[in-house]
Image (cartoon, rainbow, N blue to C red; front, side):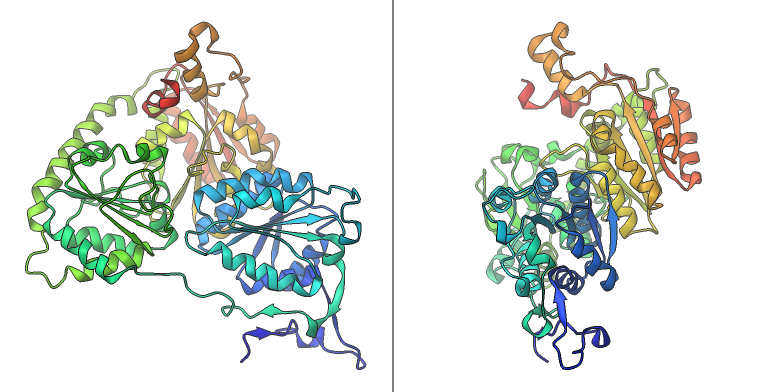
Length: 576
């Protein structure tokens, strides 16, 4: 069978020739067919006259259309959908301000290595450079924050270039692509036999690579000989769906594991190899440190937090990331799952793989972990009022089930949660990623609940973060996408407030960062959801249970102490 199928595939009656005349198909319908071939089953969008023919095509192809209140939400939702499903997300927005509104969502996906396609409208080619409505140089603007950005030049090429954009999304580490489609190109109709519609499963190859076999053997040797190894399982462990391989690796070789980003949840919190609070100690005392799928960026102190005496190995999908900011002793470019499985297999024939000898090292780290946990526990159980943020995130952690997808959207309050909240299943942690974008919470909820209606979605917001995209709470109500939302409300952009106090003193600590005392529980009820206000720590868990039982989108507005800051906030170098 040809790798290029006619646009009529699957719909012979609709697209058959009529009275000897060739059947015509519009650009919007070709786009929808290309989306369907990639497995896209939903688009997130805000309507505009430039793009409505895509909607018409989506109806015919059985692709759902979720319309939101701001284009940033559409782009974030496409990013979130990709993270949850492993399939590319898609957002469709109109030209000009519609596309510029989506820039933040695309930029966030770019830094987070999330495969999504943003389709933007454009003025007609026939009006090129004439000053048409909402005309902007979208491709030039998007090129620096995407893996591929282009204009669809002709209707016949619409499906072909959509598939090209998706192919680039998965080249190396995943990321976003952008296409603009001029209005006359999108609306025009062309003969079906003149349009190329790539066949599903036949227009891009697998990008999964196991790396150089010699490097696999070298890493196996390093692990077998290491007395104090540790591994950091980063976001690419989830991107590559490498959970099983990672678990087999750490258990077979008895290697203590830390997780960050979307890699959180790879190991269950009660797994003997799961560690969280002893990471700094491990990085300073290990003799072998394996970094899987996370860059040496600000979250890693640009690599400076790793012991200079340790052997450092980095495994990543992107060649450009390996050895960036810090020298490594061994770099392997490849799929996290395939590499870890290959290394485990390469150690299987050894007389001694070193696992037994690492028992004392694991016990040492467990002691550090336990001491850190016990030191913080009184704060997590605090009955103080206003509520200690540690108590709030402790209650959330205790509330989560193995079926709960946790989403963090905020500054200081989410920094607290990063220390305490532990997802109980792989793929059940979502945060913005390294761009640190506020406002991802509601669109991530939208994507997660649409993609996984069987899962419970729990989201923690800072009050400042929620206000950026919070009006799309109404979209969640409209599409019946229930979730349990919690706002840690201190009426401030408190992470920034802390920094201003440190730099300029208390008397200037409230400049440009103080918000109103908003009862977000009432906001939720106004929009048709469930809401409560909580000021007593003893009321947190009962309120969360009532939100769960409501079956509605919900907001539990918890008033937390504005004078308490997360250690991660206080340790940020920008404030020193």
